[in-house]
Amino acid sequence: MNFPSERILRIAICVIAAIGVGVATYIFIADSTAGSPTCLVGGGGCETVAKSSYSHIAGINIAIFGIIGWILILATVFFANDAARLGGFLVALGGFGFSIYLTYLEIWKIEAICQWCVGSAVLMTILFGLNAARLVGYAGTDGDRAEADDDGSGGSAALNEPETAT
Amino acid sequence: MSSKKDREKRREERIAAETKVSSSDRRTKLLQMAAGFAFLVVAAVVVVIVVSSASSGSSGDTNLEEVATVNRFIGNTPQKGLVLGDPKAKVARYAAWK
View: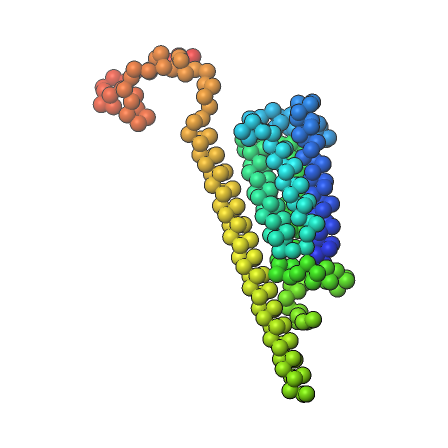
């Protein structure tokens, strides 16, 4: 199975994580100052969700957890080793699971949809896929080796190629 | 001379093979670990949602408006299942409190 080069995956993860940081930061700032984020296409879902008891965990705004998660994922982009690949995957996995739970709460408990939360969940889902592709495609390869695959040939499970000893 | 070259070549091949095996092992372990964590997260999400649904179902709405009225009418009446009072009683009593 062919994967995009790790460099492309890292750039995509970086861009999406940066957008995610922006979304989570906006939700936090809007919640702290204006009371709730503004729903761009109308409806009062954002306000309902922001004012529900589910918007805080142990008194901490849930957007704070989001910001921390996005920043952690962003940090893994700057390293091309197995620890970063696994770390990015695990944080994205946790974020993805948490997004599913929050979506469940919105639909079944709060009975209101916050567009910013849905946007954040979609971004996290994409990020989970990208991190999974990065891990499956490049786990076990050295950083230098993975970078060497960035010559446009398209990365694959690099282990299938013969190693050359120097 | 040629035997030295052969030895070096075999050594390089052995190192390359060992590197490949080591890297393959590392990859397998990482993927197994990732799969394990993915399973745990899926299980955790399912459990949280199920528990959350169950707890809301059992507690119900605590802001019922007619609780006091109902208690006043039938609060002291013994209950068996869905039947209030003595199930063998010959006289049935109906109350309308609306």
